[in-house]
Image 1 (cartoon, rainbow, N blue to C red):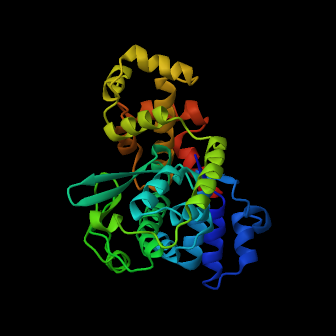
Image 2 (image 1 turned 90 degrees about the vertical axis):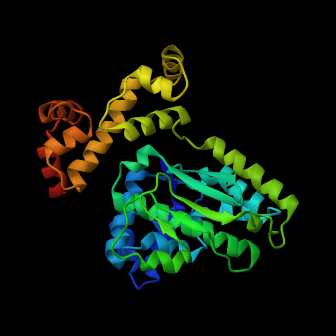
Image 3 (image 1 turned 90 degrees about the horizontal axis):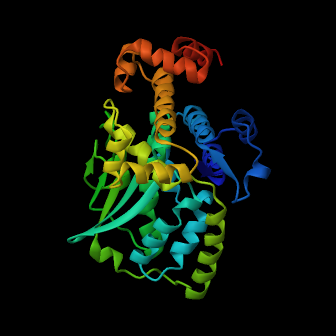
Length: 337
């Protein structure tokens, strides 16, 4: 569960471009710029949430993700950009972007799908990223979709528009900035964030690709990806199913069926990963519970119901057993800090 540390460098540089004192911001974030420029360094989801929150509040920009994506030249995605720039066509560039997106983060898993005259580039949100503050999750989605659109213009040297953009969060009161940036129809409350293009656009050539350099860049990227410690896809899939079905709590057998496994096969696969279904379920429920306690205006009865507990007392016992604090004391301690 990580982001490239270079994305934090991008956020700092973006804020300083708005007149923020770089030394003060680095102090507040707790980052040494001289150490942060190593592309192999990573930061946790928690750190990224902290940096996004501080940056957004400092420059007073509720559309931080959109505006950061518009900047396009981001250090955090330079390695992937170089691979895309040396691809032959837009379609190949996007596929390479999908394949090497883990160099940037594992918060979103990208994919490409052709349907009729359109190609959809989708970004499934890692359930471990979903349970963090809504504004941070939204900013990363906005940044990623904006970068995807801008990359076509950058790769071809021409201006292009998407057919549509889908966002997986509720419609906002102020939407004009989204229409300005994307200049196409936008749908909110969709299951998966995505951006849709005409198929004809993907056949366009990338300006001045270097096939020899591409092979070298991909080889180096493959080596880096092997070093990245990311959650196994099976665990991510289980957490997503658990979150999608709440407040209903599924049994192991029901989750196995969703994954087209037998219960025994799923148990064996999880044993090989040194974990089990109950442990995975408990982890994601606890993460979501913390988010609701700290950042959502809900009482304990609501939270308990939404997390699939029969009553508030059952959730309180669960939370106290895991955190050694009641939800009320946990919220109070977090507020004091």
